[in-house]
Amino acid sequence: MDQTLDASAASRSQQRSLAARMPTGAKVFLILSTALLPLAIIALFASFRTTQIADEGARAALRIASAESARKIGIELIGDMTALRVALNALDADKADAPSCARAQGVFAPQAASGSQFAISDEAGRLICGTPLPSSLAVAPSGKSSITTRVISGRGVTLAIRGASGQTQAEAFFPVGFLAKTAKPSEFAPDYEAQLLGGDDALTLFDLPPREVLERRGTLRIGLGLGDLTLQTRARSAPITSPVLIAMLLPIVMWAAAASIAWFIVDRLLIRPLRRLNASVAAFTPGEEINPGAITSLPAQEIRELGDTFRAISRTVVEHEAGLAEGLVRQTKLTREVHHRVKNNLQVISSLINFHARGARSAEASAAYASIQRRVDALAVVHRHHFAELEVNRGLALRSVLGDLASNIRATAPEGSAKLSIALDIAPVLATQDIAIAVSFLTTEIIELSMTSNPSAPIRITVRDGETPDRAVLRVVSPGLIQTDDLQVLVEERYGRVIEGLSRQLRSKLHYDPFVGAYEIALAITGRD
Image 1 (tube, one colour):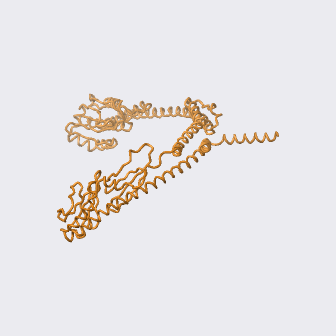
Image 2: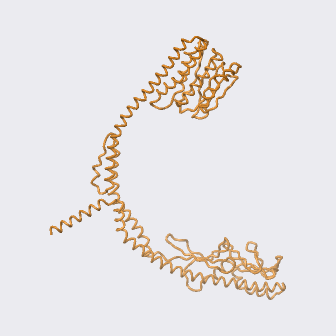
């Protein structure tokens, strides 16, 4: 007895363990399948059988009524047109054949009270027999033997035929009241709608009341054998009965049951655990470890595994953050050391050039050393400002760069340019290091060209906004840059190639105004200071 209980308990424990390991999606699928299968089977058979029986009865009744209506209309119209064809053939031989005309009038006499009328005319349109049709009802025959039809919405149908010789033609108009009376079934038939279709027009013989909300209708079309005339009928399908209503409500009940069961299962197994896990993750701060202990006892195995994964990730993040912080400190120190050494090296180079310039034996050598020193100073100015802006990475302020550059040039200017005047009007724009270096070198070369051409000429440097927000315009103006023969020689032999190369580095065309003495070029900027 004890062994049996132990085996049963072990079996239940194994089943619970298997259910706990089963994915949540499989659990939802099995529960929904078991709960909704009986309802699905009942709804399928009830709706299928009810709809089948109702539709078969409605189709049978509509088919019988439509066939009888089409037959009666076809017999009446074909008979009348046959009488007209006989009269036409007789009048083709003798247009004064009064008996043929009288027979045609006798055929249409019983229908005259309902508004039916006919007209026989010759090929010139002169009336031979009958009553002329108004132009709104007339139709021209299209062939010698075929019947031409015209459906006039709300009024009736006009048929036309031409005689065998083509010398005579006949038209007959049948009003809607006459056609509706003719088409009415002789025996009991369910209410239905009938329309005569021809071309793009439709003539309603009798209609059904407006369609109700739950009403269904069946449609049937039958050709009359007269041109393109077709009888279209519609009848109500079987009314909504209890079986049909049950069949319609069962899917709603199934949906409600499925939605309720799915919500309950998903809420218990997924939503609540995910909300708790989300709260734990949202409260996580770098350096701490996520503790999803509150959700480890829930039945969803995937949620438990997800919580363990988040905890492992938080541990890894803590370890990596410590390593990244240490590496960032080392990298910052190394970068500052590199910039410091570059700046010192540029200062050493500038000092060496200045030392050699003092020991030069000629004025030309001293001027050459000073020119080289100004270019090294231009690079040092850009590097110094780049290192200052490195922390925020906004770009270099051209106002500060060009201001320091002008100060260095005035400090190292030759004796003839000791009182050199450099005016600045710089917009607060920012540029990348590459653009700033090219601008500094280009400005230095143009100022060197002006000082060489006219040492005492004042210089004005401006930077203004360009045509677009990402462009600015650099302009250097000086009387020393006005076109002369000496200036042309300096440009061709010494400065021209350097200035042109720097303008290509800026990826823009350098404009020169020889009458004003101005160089102008567009620059790419990163923003405004």
